[in-house]
Figure 1 (tube, one colour):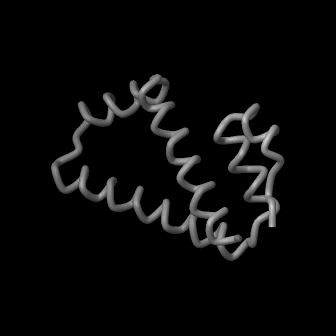
Figure 2: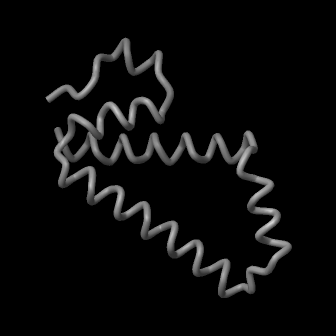
Figure 3: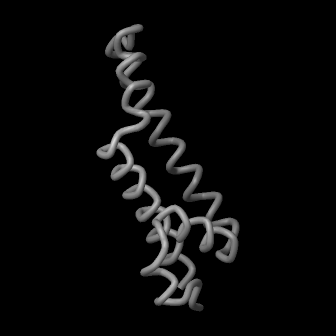
Length: 90
């Protein structure tokens, strides 16, 4: 089962690829992968809180919302999601 055209895949962003695949892939797999990603976020958030996330850290996080390194990490997460979904739908 091919979820996307190879030419389209190369001309789109990781986010666009994810949303295109998420609309056509098995929804149970998509939901499971999103839940796993949210669980990772919750673990990371708990770790920060356990280390004493304070106002200074909150300001740092807010300042990193628009950041090239963070943008790159977000793209990597979308690529990971696409890979996880596609491999399970094959």
